[in-house]
Image (cartoon, rainbow, N blue to C red):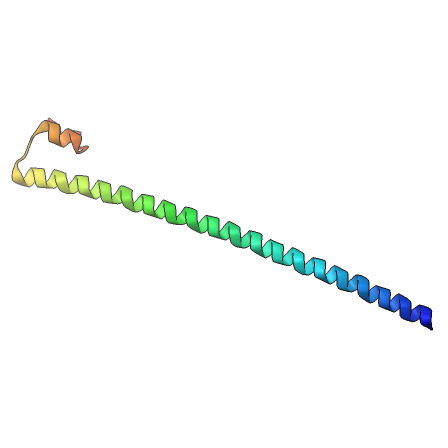
Length: 89
């Protein structure tokens, strides 16, 4: 009967060791996935900020061109510098 108890005890020890490994693997996978998601979020934020800056610059150039039209400011150098070659003729 002692042999059966020893085998059962050894089986429980092996099972417990395997359980710890599984928990460590799950935790490591979760940490890796969290890091990947944080990196992706940072990239999305940077892309969004760049997109907003591009749109803001475009709108500023359009506003300057409209202001030039309204005020009659037709200086070619100023319009070309603002990125509006069509108005610099």
